[in-house]
Image (cartoon, rainbow, N blue to C red; front, side, top):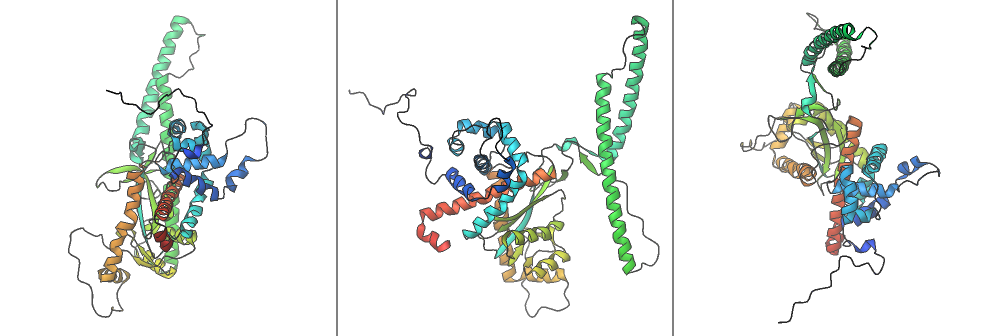
Length: 463
């Protein structure tokens, strides 16, 4: 029987011709799309930070580093050490880097140094999505999700416990110092009085450091409470100046932190807040907000706040969406957590029709019948909104909210694995969230490009 022949296989065979990086991946691969996209972006704010020619080793090209970061975030690999490993093992990342291998520290420092400039690229990518016809602003949806901070909730401490811990640590430090002094007296008796005894024992040093940390956190909470009390007092005085109050004067605002007010020692700007999608559980994190367009689930505005409540985020987000796109959305859908008369009035004043239920929607409960006849003139803002959401058109429009914005969070958190921030502090977290949202839009743009390439006729009609 003739033995089976196979294709030649020799792992030690040298390449006869120099390799061409463009031949390593399919033509419609995401890496090539990211490379072409970054070439269209204005990286001037990053390039001008390098200054004139100087001595020493030449730095890596910022365009290459931006391409690598965009691709890494798009495929869910944000950690700099993981990216550095992919620069050795992953063909797509090696193609983007032209086979160069910056180490993880270079990648991490580049991201931190140029975080503001990378954040500004969000609007540039959004404008490309608009030019591609992926943003119509006929219907947008606003929502938020809680993302875990780079800190454990077990490293947070309430103001009341800070006072208890401060007293306990002070007592322990005093006891340890007395023990150290007694030990010094005993050593002097044995070894003589010339021996040094001013070094703090390790136990005392550790407790002193923790005591200083707790005192600093208490001071910050007290400053925040005093500042908030001053703002409330000024607002109350202004209101009473317009409408004098009768009867007993109100109690002054609380200038001492609430006993349950907490501060985290790892990331002090993060907060403990209810976790998204897990009733009864809490997370040490941030509240991440987005405005999503219905046409292709493009994020048109994004922000991060340390407030667990969404109500105060509606107007700033819509204002940002208008500034980013240059247009006012026709309809905006929000869940009940955003409802307030001020929000409804502000949206309507901008020319955007808001759909915000005043009451929490309960799945499975029967919906009240659609109203008939002319709308009464004496309805409050909340009653008008309830009436609008009971109409056939109102129910149909609001039912689209979940299909517009919630899949975006699923794609970010489940599809790409972004469940926790890498950076700490509000400024850096906002920059990282902008990078996550920018690469989300890049993926949507790439999907639309591939669809157009595969179906040119349909693409021409849509684009």
